[in-house]
Image (cartoon, rainbow, N blue to C red):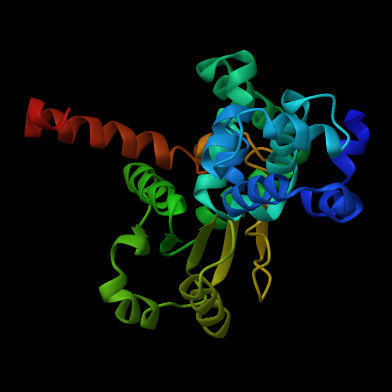
Length: 293
């Protein structure tokens, strides 16, 4: 089977096309494969046959009945399915398995670095300085800045809030204050900015915060990956960037790089406010002692 053909169909399609040729042993193997597609993409033919309780060469015979030269080619097909089917990557185990599949070719660390570099290169072509400036201008005019994110975006939100505070801005990380969320949102005004960070599907809480901000007239910024881009009502300023293709790290490097660019640009336009605040903060840490260095 050619690679192009393998990439255009899924396992279920192959089973339907070749159902008349399949034996009882084939069926048992297929049950094993479809029961845990993540594990199936990682194992060799003997391991799959053993789990199905059939002869060690049964997986090879199944692969040939389905049109492959042997089990290695069939396994490559299963791996391609795992990597190409986007829906599977809502599950952490599938994302992890896909990364392990890719790591077999170049090595674990090299594959991670390749993924990060590829994702960052996409940012170079998809996010503009004008979008970064729109973010920083909104922040520079804010009375108060509220940052919120869930999951991995929670960690990013915390770091952004700390950096903005050190830069002299009244910023709060709402992600770590969910028990105080009603009180915080009750104080929102049209002079405030809400910065939402969202990776994958927006949470219900995030969408509630967006709606409340809209009703208060607060300006809303959003930094998301492509999966988290559907926020309603639409943010006033929105940067959406891929964190990597399926099977790539999907880490915080891309959004952190964009956030760093925003904060750096903020320092360039706020008439030395950031610079003065950073100097004051450095002096304060020195006065408090080495434990705060």
